[in-house]
Amino acid sequence: MERRWKSPERSWGMLHRRMVTAGARVGLIVLGLLALASACTGNKGAGRVESQLLAPPGVPSAITRNEAATVVVNLETVEKQGRLADGVEYEFWTFNGTVPGPMIRVREGDTVELTLKNSSTSMHAHNIDLHAVTGPGGGAASTNVTPGQEATFQFKALNPGLYIYHCATTPVPDHIANGMYGLILVEPKGGLPKVDREFYVVQGDFYTQGGSGEQGLQAYSRAKRLAEEPGYVVFNGSVGALTGDNALKARVEETVRIYFGVGGPNLISSFHVIGEIFDTVYPEAASEPVHNVQTTLVPPGGATIVEFKLEVPGNYILVDHAISRIEKGAVGILVVEGAEAPEIYQKVK
Image (tube, rainbow, N blue to C red):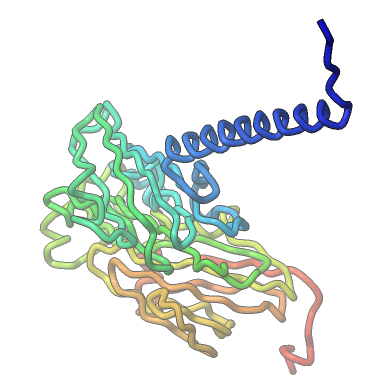
């Protein structure tokens, strides 16, 4: 029987076609697995990232990614005794154990997955209302948790800006008055202009049964809160939280950005830094800034962003320019070090 041999060209051609077919099949399988993985994560952007949460006045790092992500935020409501003033203790209600709660930083277009846990040691139910949320109660409707429970919801960060978050459990004013507030920054897609220093400051008014400065553990006074007569008006939860060893620090030639909010529950703030002019202010954290501002109004449940460059060393005093409130605790210090600038400022005989 005659045996026929295939030409080398024909053999290689058939082998090539088979390899191409097999490669296409492998490619389709790989693409299918990638699509499945993407569907499982439910995110078409930069994946899942853990939110950086710092105690105030610390600010999370600026966002450098160019794609949306799912940002995972874990908060815990904790009721704890702490310092309100020298020799004065108070039973604070907090997010993550601090007043204000940690600042949350996300990007416009991000999906935020927030889990709120209520400590098993709490005596009250709590939830969270974030003013950055489009949805029922700003998230409060989905996060009502009794002690020992937790709840998770997610939202899309649609609008850039700086927003207050707070507890909205009934009676809402009591929860806010006891310290349950913080800020969430939604950076615009293009980011904010770069600065050298960022600080996080929130003003709140506190109502104690004892008089201002009365020593010992002070109970909350609903009557004084209703009368809007706080014994203390403070930055970051206590008298002196931003003075002495806790003062903010920067250097000459640096640019400073302060994320400033008012938790309330009642008082408007006239935020001012003595000895500085705000080069840029985002009023109520709006997208369009204004410039060369001396004092900016911030309502309860509102926030602003202020920026300024430091030219002269010295101590700069943060105040609510309803100036009597200095005596109730609304004062902080920004210590600026560096070379003198006599062409800008100097003492003359």
